[in-house]
Image 1 (cartoon, helix red, strand yellow):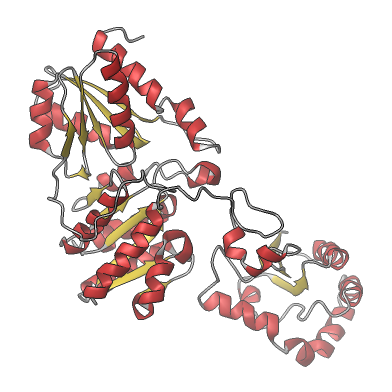
Image 2 (image 1 turned 60 degrees about the horizontal axis):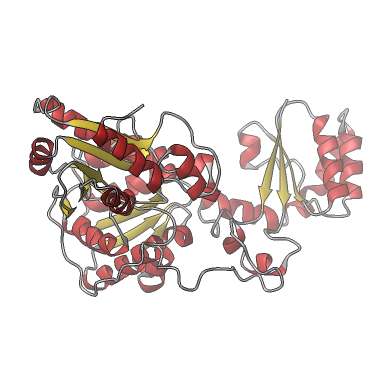
Length: 462
C-alpha cells in the first residue's frame, strides 16, 4: 500500500522533453473523462470505497479530469491512477489523498502545479528560479557582480558553438540541462546538431557513442555528479570501443549552495580507472577553450572537467590551439617544494606559493592539465630535483590525481627520493554550504595549504 504523488509542473530544470512528457501532456489535455465518466461512476458505486472517492471528485468541482484511467501506463505498471488533480486547490487535493488512502495497493496521484506559482518573475522564467542566489524581489532580477569574470559554463557554450561553425561533425548532447551546461548557446546557433535526451544520462552517453561510431564528433555536457549515473555506459559503450566522444563535466568540484548530492568530486577517481580515457582540467577559462579544441581534434574518449561559476578573470584568446596530450605546464620554478596542481586548484597553488615566498620558502608550481595520462617525464624530474611534492585537486583523494602520482612514483621506485603530500577531498560526503567555508573546513583554502606546506618543508608537521 503506497501512494506516489507525481508533481507535474511541465518542467525539470529546463522544459521537459521526451515520450513521458508527451504522455503526461495528453493526460492533462485529453477528453478521456468525458468518454468514460459514466462507466467509472457506475463501477465506483459498486466498490466498497467508491462513494468516498466520488464525493472527493465532486468536491473538486471538475479539477480531476481522469480517474483510474483503464488504459494508462500507470495502470499497466500496477498502479491505480488518480488525476490529474489541481495541486493549487489544497482542499480538493487533501480530499483526493484521503480517498487514495482507502485504495488497496499502490496508487499514483497525478498533481498539476505551476512552477513558480504566485511570483510572476518565477512563473515567467521558471528555469532561472529553479535554484538562485540573491535577487531583487520587485523585479526578479538576480543581484550579481557586474565585474565578475565570465563563467566556465558560458565559455564552454560559446567555444563549442564557434568550433561547430567550422566543423559540421560536432553535435551537442544534454540530459535535460541545456541552460545549466551552456549548450543553450550552442543550440541557438546549431539547432539541428543539438539533442536534449531528457533526464537520461546513460542514454546521452550511449547515444554519443552511436554518433561517434557514425563519424560525428559528439560532445555530451553533463554535470559531474550526474555523469556518475552513466558510468557503465562510459566504460562499455565509449571506452571499450575507443570512440571519439568528448565528455564535458560541468560543476566539477565543490558546488556550494547546490550542495551535498551535487558536489562533483568523484570524476577524477571514477574516470581515471577506465582504460583509453583521457582526462583534462583547465587552470582557467582561457585554457578551457584550448582544451575543448584539443578534445575535439583528439581521436578517442576524452573528459574535460571544470568548476561551477566564474573563471579567474584572464583574457580569452581569439584563436584556439591544441595542447600536447599528457604534457604539464611549469608555471613557477622553485627549490624546496613543488605544487602539482590540476584544474581549479592551480590558482590556489600559485597563491600559496606567494605566501610561502614571503616566508622565505621557494615553491614551484606545475599546472598538470592532464589527470590521465600524466606527464611522467616531468614528474620524475621534479621528484629527483625537489624531493618534496604536494598534489592539489578539487576531488576525492581516494583514487584521485594524487593517487595517480603516488602510483607512478612508486612504479619508478622514486618514493625513497621524494616525499609526497596529497591535498584534496577526504573520505567523506561534503555537506551543503558556501564554497569558501567548505574549502576552509576541508583545509583546502590558500592560508591552510601554505601553512601545511611550510610545515612540510621545515619538518614540523603534526
